Image 1 (cartoon, rainbow, N blue to C red):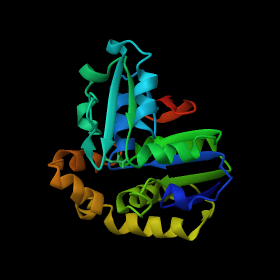
Image 2 (image 1 turned 30 degrees about the horizontal axis):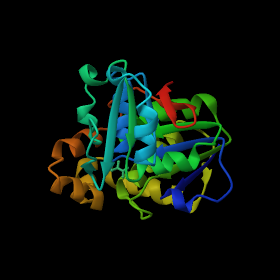
Image 3 (image 1 turned 90 degrees about the horizontal axis):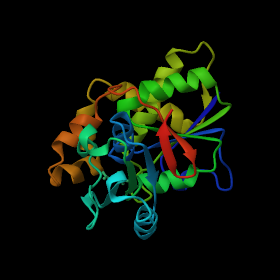
Image 4 (image 1 turned 180 degrees about the horizontal axis):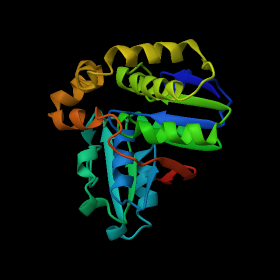
Length: 241
Ligand code: MLT
């Protein structure tokens, strides 16, 4: 297995996709996707464009859908939800499809949607992602951070490092990959006991704290809290594996 870490979707090699692409947006899109599916959502359908989300979700019965929209950390007007994983309670999401558009996370998923396997990862479902990789052994894996508007995001890279570090401890063979992979593992190794603190220092973490999302940071920093593995079933549609 060859493992490549990309800090943002923009840094991925153009006109190529890997065997398995893993989109990461710890704060908060992939934490929200994992939580919605763990709590019984029928599926999560992602859109980079808000108008398109409204158009497609209009074709669903109102009691079978939820619309989640986030820009700059705040809820988009006209949506049922923003992008807080804590809003995806079982009562709210059960048997409904979550239609979601966020600033960076859904754009990251769009970039990798043509890979034969597309997964989403967050700190909260790290173990489920590692289990899948150990079982399926895809030849080329990309761990793609969503970043923030094209820039590096600490929380996504530490999650890539958490996956790679755990994978490495379960394999005898030497890990092959890019320099970013080594950097991500080093970041995780340094901060693994203080993930909440790291999220609080990250620039998007600070942005969310200004929006009073303290509990979101706490929730998103919990390693291996959920066993769910979101996997793309058709372009843009993720279900439980
Ligand atoms: C994003 O896609 O940029 C994030 O998920 C933003 C957020 O924290 O809501």
